[in-house]
Length: 161
Image (cartoon, rainbow, N blue to C red; front, side, top):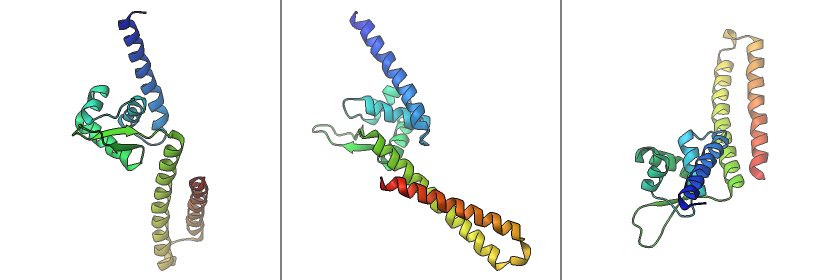
């Protein structure tokens, strides 16, 4: 195989890998750009600058900056230092299962906590004005609270693993 054909084949492989793998990552509530960027960093043997990312994905530097900040927030990428390089460099965390499951479970736990707090506020309002509500409404509210408590238990168990 000629060098040009081999490079084209490798480029096609990378494109397909980024496309398919990023679809899986989108199920973890990452947007398309964040997913594609993670896979690009994961496949890269060397850390990348925002300019490298921009060229690799054909997106704006602003889009790359926003995506890498999200990935940093979820501990899916890390900033690294390389002697002689003045720009920020980033690389993907390699332990995929552990990193994604922790990020996903933590996001669920945060969301559950927000919803439980909101439901507790509604419960307090309900208790302060019982004449405006009926017994069935109270039962539904209690079911919703129980549902969120059960979800929290499940995700706390996952968090411990």
